[in-house]
Image 1: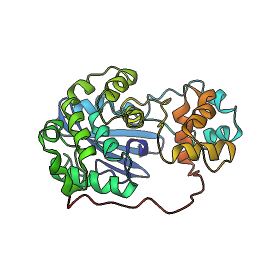
Image 2: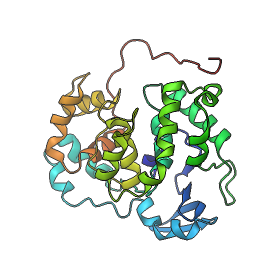
Image 3: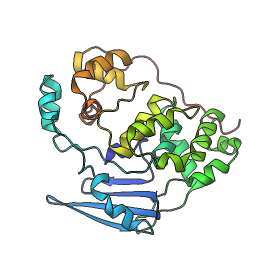
Length: 283
């Protein structure tokens, strides 16, 4: 379930070792899903107008529809990947079926630090959304796309969002209904990258969470290419092209390899100063 949080500290999610809360907007209205692990049993309960919709796909959200067929054999092509596949055998990629939900944090996470992304996302939710249904306090719904599309770009400046990301978010919100109708990850990717301001990285982040795409790789990410290169070759730095070459033998599970490396906490050495945190609140 942690893979559903595109930004650390996502207020639409609350995760503990034995349970998880997930709040979203369904075709039937707002809803909150609770997953509870008791022994080897996973139980579900839901709240709000979207409760039935969430319960109907609760197993997909939990990653239980994730198809790992063939991955055990593929993982043996690299000793580290084989070990991670054994040690994290329970890792599954969830599929929420909601596109705009994940598109908001993906856009707000473009080319900024994790702290910038988190602060901007929380402020956007507090301004444009409401508390989630159910007993879990502090859980927020994603914003309604109609509300975001109608807001002028300068309304996002006090939230720490500059014009470029604000305009991209507004354009995406205007196409949210069409995006939600996409039948699969490939169709959604094609429509996403047709929106100015959205590229392969943003599309990959969204389709992984919305469709459970286990093969998609976030090309253009500041860290992933380095982490993959370090994990698979020991090199401290990599390029997107080299990363794709290293991951090619694991298709159609390339994204799963990236998820395993992240789950194991494997990261390339960091050099130099951190990216500075900027503020657009007074622009």
